[in-house]
Image (tube, rainbow, N blue to C red; front, side):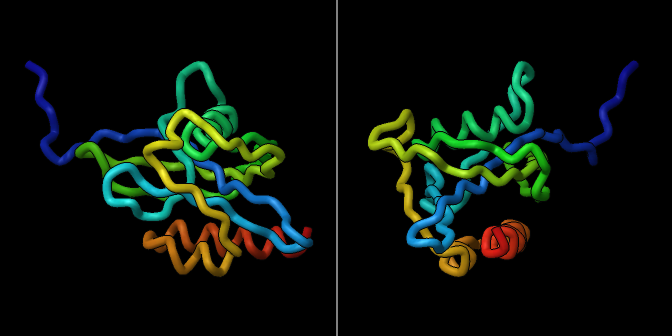
Length: 143
C-alpha cells in the first residue's frame, strides 16, 4: 500500500526573464501585471519539457510582455513562491530586449510598463524578486 506524505508539496519549475533595455544610456526594466490582482512582476512560467529554461523565459517574455530579445545564458538568480498548493521554484535570467511589440498574446490581460531599476524595486512586492532586480541594476549600470 502506497502512502502519501501529507506534508509533501508539489514543486513547479519555472523560469523568468528580467527584460531590460537602455534609453538615453540609462537602464530600463520591463514589468508586467499579474492576471488577477494586477501586481507588478516579471514574465515567468512553467519550463516546458522541450525548452531550456532560457528558451522558456524568452517565450514567456514574448507571450506575457510582447518582448523579443537575447536571454543571457548565465543564471541570474532564483526565488520561490507559493501557488497551486505547492512551491514554484523560479530560475531568473536577464534578457536584453531588442524588439517591443505593440500587440502580443496576453496584451489584453496584462499591463506592461518600463521602469528604472529603482522604480521597479519600489513596485515589486516580493522581497526575493526585489533583491534580484537590485542585483540586475548593479550589473546593468556597469555594462
